[in-house]
Image (spheres, rainbow, N blue to C red):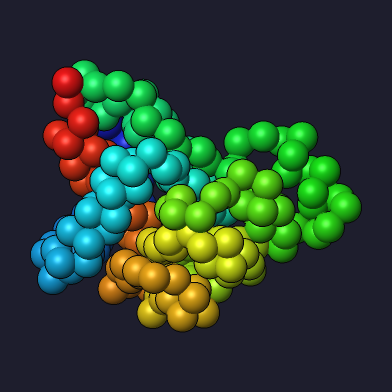
Length: 204
């Protein structure tokens, strides 16, 4: 009853909201469906993730804002599990330790908050994954450059054409959208696919 009264009192607002919701759902569907054109790239990244873990190496992930949350989400599913029981596997999100992030940011600048951690934690043949909707996040770019100099494999989940980051990684997956929210939604779907492949590979 309250909902009907609201519609009657604010009809323009209701239909505007309905239009916004419909537009968001349609944009989301369009972007997600477009990933069907990138199955080969997703498979390449999944293969790289599995190879890294099978050879006893680790995965490091990073990003800013929502992409930091995606990095932590993916790392959590690899260390713990996604949907199937298996042993824990090594993955580190470089976005979680506020003492490290703020000390490096204070002493070396925000652009170095990830590269310094890569220098400290990464070894040759580790896989370092950067997540950036713009493809131009300087701290992610510098970390991936540092990772390459250490002999790490590098990959990135990107959007908006891939920016500068696409030029410094071994493998980039560029979501074909300029909408940050839609790119992030595609990134976490890709992340879930990676975790599903890890689970199926390492299931006991």
